Image (cartoon, rainbow, N blue to C red; front, side, top):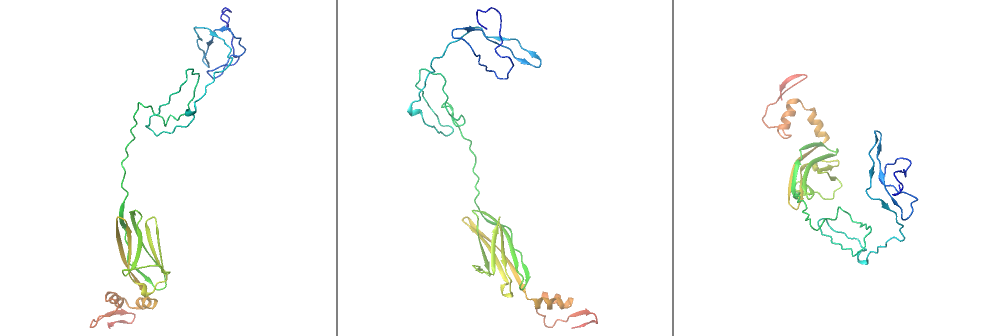
Length: 259
């Protein structure tokens, strides 16, 4: 209300609103007005808060102009902990906004100490976690050899047969995935039997595992399966040859006897 209008208060907004800012329109330059504010809620209204001094209305003829010097028209990028000193040579300061990221600017009076995180040495020589196992297969049927290895840097895998490196041979397919090494032997023959070795090598060392692969022919397997139980047992124990001078007795459908 005007300062000389007695005790009559006039509401400048007809409806309550949530903002704490309000612009009073249609004011005349040179007037003095008193301002009070009342808060409303579902429980009622609060006691009015009144400014002690009246507000003098003045007309702004021209807004002050602030010119940024050329050497300040740039972007400052600093690391966390670096001091930033900016001097603004203005005698008249109205409102100045600096586009600075508060997360990257720290007062020069504060010394930032980055947290020291211990570095873990991930280097490791090759080590087999799952070795190769001996296998027996049949001639003409592909078979696989498996083992697992770990190490950093990632080790280089070398396959050997009877201490001879297996190079580019279409019969063999070597693969490694997630530390699992595999060697596929396609349609093996008795010549492919022997001792297979998997060697892992990196800058810190090397490791190796080996196994034995036996390849049997189909005729040999059928003859082995057709023998009586006692002969088959002795045949396996004697490495495929009968022991001279050994008397064998087996029981068949027609009875038992010495062989």
